[in-house]
Length: 189
Image (cartoon, rainbow, N blue to C red; front, side):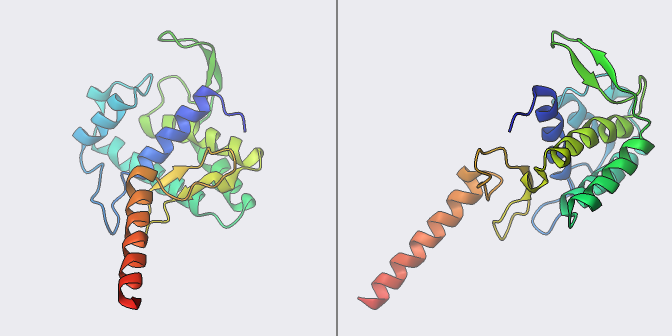
């Protein structure tokens, strides 16, 4: 599957935003405006001044994050498409060609001066929409490690990725399975 650089970046932002949500094994990653500013700076969200972000922006981004979670959990493409269509429409999508900050020509879907939440909803929502259009929604996954559940986009050629990170979650489960086999072999012998 061919995914251009901008779509790949937007999908990365989507996953990283989803993974800030509090869960059974993780605290809230966007608990205050300072954390939101760090997110914007780390992800180099264009057209957003982190200094101007407020509690209102934080609350709006939490709502967008919840909407992305519903897209990941959608039962089928139609449900995902309806969620994406609503989110993108409410964000006031305004596609524009741009070549800023040394990047080649690409499309921004957010309106000039859009809030951070609308910016994320438009750009990331369109990236999710591209996966639905390509028939690749099943690439939107949650880590299969029992104590994880982090979101990721499986960009492997054969869609076989099961863990958010094979070096951590995947390796931890493989080591646990190996040790269990060794214990069983020791008990049987």
